[in-house]
Length: 446
Ligand code: PMP
Image (cartoon, rainbow, N blue to C red; front, side, top):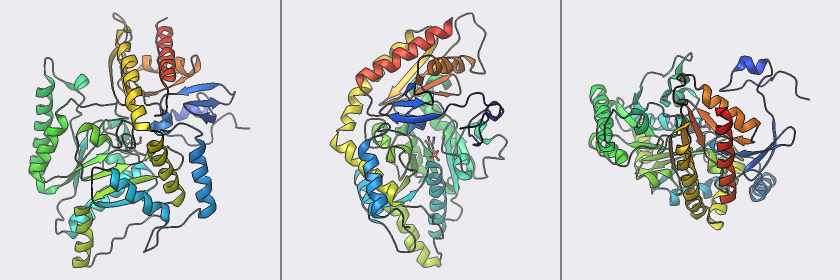
């Protein structure tokens, strides 16, 4: 039996409350968009776990793919001239689908590790190419890029830096392009985009463009509040970066593999990245696997540069290219193709959007937004009620939704309720999701 207090050190949690055993919920099983708690009670999982179980829970084909690979070769490394078949096939298939074109793929275990690798790789490549000053990274306020040292330095959420002596030197942040939250009074979307780009330009110029190794952004921000920049933002940002010779790197840990209705969120949002980091839905969360797709020009800097300088690319990891993870990812790609999941996402996105935007008529809802199957609403206290800087209303709605109505969503800072259901969700289940959410909102008003 599990003891009264949790012995697992939890992240993103009130450790004191868990120590006193309040608030720990054990999830014991899952099927499709549903998970079951200890009592066997079904909960509609509208967050796909941590934005990741894209094909839902308990997909028998994914389980079968894992078992087959476990039987054939449960592990081998991809270091020093050895490799495994699933890793090689997966690289080819990801490259063929990605907007990067020709290049190479590095595999790691988590999104954070993928982002850390990207930083190391680009710095090494720049050193090898005789550009040792080019080492700083710019990302955005409220961007989320992971929990390891470089990834949390790339992250632009103050709460993730506090107490950890972060960000590390050389990690800079530019403005959060969240129009709804950050536009000046009366500022048009276009003026807002121009202001965002002016801020970025000022940062680049004050640091010196020759010192900037890259700009990293999520096509649609996730943990920082489901940030969907206005149309035109990416065009302008990319024009600016191009003028300075600064590469755009896309963190597709959430948006990759169909979440926005295309294979890559960069395609949906009109981004032409020079590298893409993937994770989460790549294996539908059935195995920890991330991938960094690098364009050939960057890769060539290393092979040529290393030879010239005699450097050795001393980076490797025990589980890079793990055959089971890669075999599962291949099965994910097969399923998405065979079951026409991208078309399904596009169709379901219409239903999702209709129901989500309609929530704006609810007295507790301020703003609603979505792309594909990721969306959010911002709650606001009732007119005349006190302000809610601590997000008490979101906490209340979240608890009621889960405990009374069996609905799991993600609560984020700034009163955000985020939804990213498994891509396989049906129309009926989307309606169920929003019916339950409205019931929770209504209950929270009493
Ligand atoms: N990038 C983005 C956009 C993410 O959302 C996350 C995880 N929430 C990460 C990176 C880090 O991935 P992981 O938690 O697998 O390290």
